[in-house]
Length: 254
Image 1 (cartoon, rainbow, N blue to C red):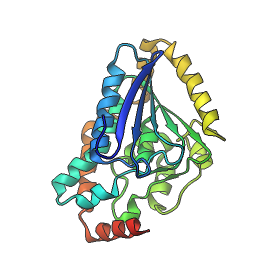
Image 2 (cartoon, rainbow, N blue to C red):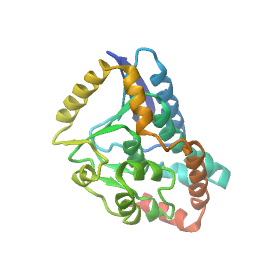
Image 3 (cartoon, one colour):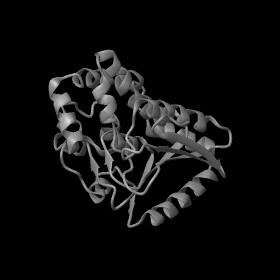
């Protein structure tokens, strides 16, 4: 599926399903891309040929810049805000409930919702360039929707460090040490080789056993269908503030 700006593509090869997203603004995530990403993850995971999923973005620079600033500025009321931020909830919940193990491929910087995607994967590979930042507080919002996924993966201490120090990137090594990344590689080529090695092994593994593992990994998150939407409402309200409007304008002007 393609929108005017950006697209989501899927493929299946040797029981490995791949979901790839792209947006020209550092792979940021407007609402249309978020919805298509959630739908693609759910539908691909349900395909009888697919045993494991890989989530990736195009290019060799940023993995994902998070929310689209242009779309944030276009939000005019709390209902529109809820709708937009619910897009992130849909993607995280799709990754959580799809029944297949999800491998994330993080080739470059991950910001905001991009950190959420990396956190919601079951196994995340990265390069040394894949530093992370939760920038939401810097623009007067907060990582409310992605927060449960980040905290579940990294723990409250690491999550709070990212959420509070919203202007600073943490290195890929820091993210590895705090459990977000399973492995960090010097080059994209080395990372891709490691991803394919693991994905190939998983594609030949027991689907039933992997499905049971997936359920165990995500025990205790059954309330996220409602929790993440409630959190989206908080972000949707805050994005209307004068503080956030001015902060986003300043970011866009940089």
